[in-house]
Image (tube, rainbow, N blue to C red; front, side, top):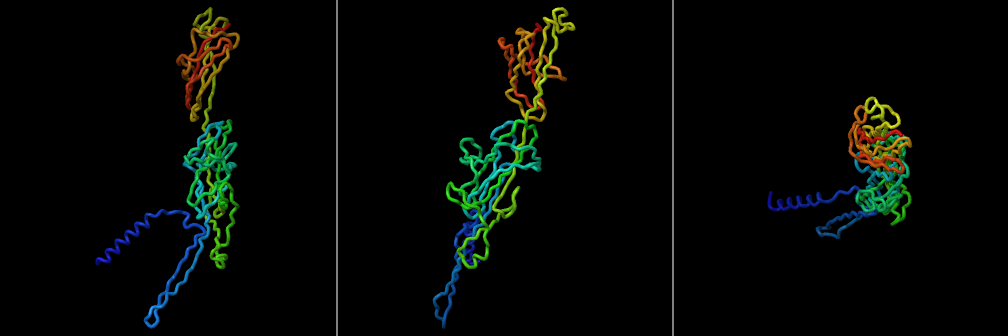
Length: 359
């Protein structure tokens, strides 16, 4: 390789590196851009150079309408019975080569498959759509704006959208509510104004007579609930309930009586009873928190303050153990026992014990 060719080779590598560094955008050249291609023809007459002849061809770039909607994350949204403002998130991306508005609709499945190898079994309520106004990726009630469309989404721009709903308190662990979000492209209608519906135009006939005419071509794929090339795209997510299933049992045993003492005692006036309240949370459920017990005593028994109240005890074989720690309160005016148990995880049982005398 001679010196000149070496220099050309270096320049070629440099040019390639510049090309490789350019970002790749899905939208491509903006709609309405005029691409002009000019050819120059040089020629001679009798060895004398003549004025070059040129010709130009303008091509106006048509509008390609394309978009995607994608669930944020890859797992179901875990919710609790009675939960308000349960949130599932989606990303809407404008893959068109023009700024557009996007109408948003949320729908619920009517049975059938959910989004994560599960089956839709119930409907959430009070379904609303919010845009991530502060772009922090998290739903902020009072900050994020409730919307029905995305306004002026530029080419290759994405926005996070939240579907927010309430969960009926009657739902049990494993119940699933499948929801979908559909975005439909519309004309860019200017700030704070939703544009008109888009119409796909003929992609060839108009350009034959008017090269400045901008056709509209739908190029979107099919989503979860929509078809290809319909200027819309949809994605599905779901809510899965994780509930706490508590079972409460109240048992009593005679500890002693005035005649027999602790030997085979009977429930006669003056006898001492021990009450045990056991609270069990079914396995596989959510942890139960703020477990408050209120137990008003009947008028024909009197609370034994010398023994006290014991909380967070255990059960063996369905029988309360003589354990736990001192806690709880007794209100003499209302004759009521109150206490708060520690959190009860799925599969766990906690107890409250106290004693009273038969009047």
